[in-house]
Image (tube, rainbow, N blue to C red; front, side):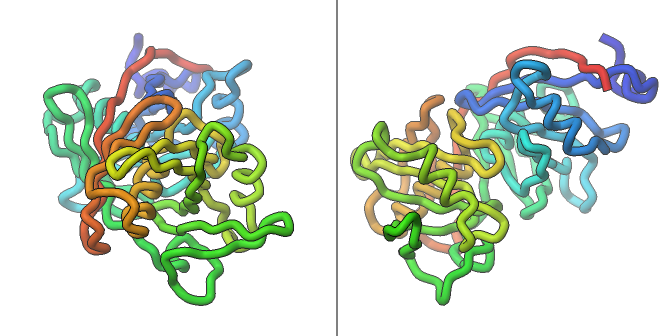
Length: 288
């Protein structure tokens, strides 16, 4: 494979790496040596699973814009919209920069649109991520609510739905359900994603408590519909249920794509920790 700098400069093709974290899949691009500037229509074309590469999100590795930070991390949904944060993507980002020799560090500091995060590549190959502190202030999502509360009632299709709301660098609404297999993820998830109470849309998590240390979760992601896994969604579900005193400080979150370990002690000033796998699927080049 010729170098990325050469192929991009000639305008012929763009090298990329396909990665996945619990089935949440990504196209990862090294943009350290040249700017990444492609329109949303191009990203949508790459995301198409029949005519393109196919992915849930596109991850872009860029030079840091701040001192004492190693990289800048940008995320684009399959619809071409740029978003603030992606937990599964953060783990893949860490493995990518290590595997590609872009850093020799095992503790990597990364700037995102929502702030600084720290990634730890463990000897096992799994990645532990400091996801920052949860923000329950409605304006942080943003979420149109009179005052901050642990629980909110939203009117949806002539009925009231109880949710918790939190920002994990991106907006999340969390619902507690009795049976995750029967949860109306497609219909209710789509309705809540674009509910007028969320002017910038929202990710919607459907959580089933198994016991104090285990929950099952399905997530309807903003701009991507239901995915096999959502790292920030797993963090959001855990912290909402922890806020409601339904789970312990360390919880296994089982998503359709597999398990993540989420830790949070219930202190709003303490960070949320996420640990899980990140796998390279294949390398390729695409014409641009």
